[in-house]
Amino acid sequence: MALVSINELPESILLEVFTHIPARQLLLRCRPVCSLWRDLIDLVTLWKRKCLREGFITEDWDQPVADWKIFFFLCSLRRNLLRNPCAEEDMKSWQIDCNGGDEWKVESLPGDHGTDFPDSKVKKYFVTSYEMCLKSQLVDLKAEGYWEELLDTVRPEIVVKDWFAARADCGCTYHIRVQLASADYIVLASFEPPPVTVDQWNSAKWTEVSHTFSDYPPGVRHILFQHGGQDTQFWAGWYGPRVTNSSIVIGPKVTGDPARFPAQPEHTQGRERAARLPSSLHLH
Image (cartoon, rainbow, N blue to C red):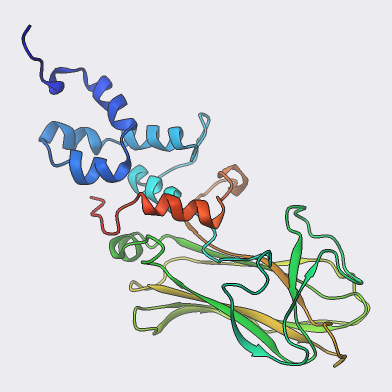
């Protein structure tokens, strides 16, 4: 029986085979084999199928995508880049920048004179004291799987979110600062709104703060996230702003209803995905 070359298979069959091959192997191992494979691997159809297979889109997805290959990689890497955002591991992974008054503390929701968090999965929060309390994390984007070409050419959206609340019986002041920095820590873009002061005898409701970085300068390699505050009554104990469920998420631009985008995976799951992707890869 004569041997048959794999390239004699119908292109539709080859595409189906490529759909099941990990993206890293497709681009680094399969694409250079021959011009036929290169052309098939560059097809929009293949990357759209891979997005569907991974659950990044649904069958009825109707939003425009400029480049499905880039969309796939950004979805593969998409997760919360902040560790321990909801205080489940006490103060682990956070750098304490200011620890005034009775210092930072972790408490369980809803807390004294507090309210439930909008998401029932969030069980704890960090709370500040009567002098300034600030904590931060520095995210190394290359260590998280984002390579230079992707960051500098595509410049995907960087969405930062945080939640804060006051005690009903005490006023407080909340601070947040987020900076995009270069490899040598030069600040290229920043988000630092004026401090928010909440009066005493308030509703204690949770408030979301959100900012999207887009069209930022090339060269971003780190993200600094810092937040905190203090109470306005100077009471001993933990009467300052409460913070939880902070996030930094990098992903493709979605022009329609953001709720249709798949929920972001947890940080650890995202790291497993990132480990399967190349640390340096030419997308075109």
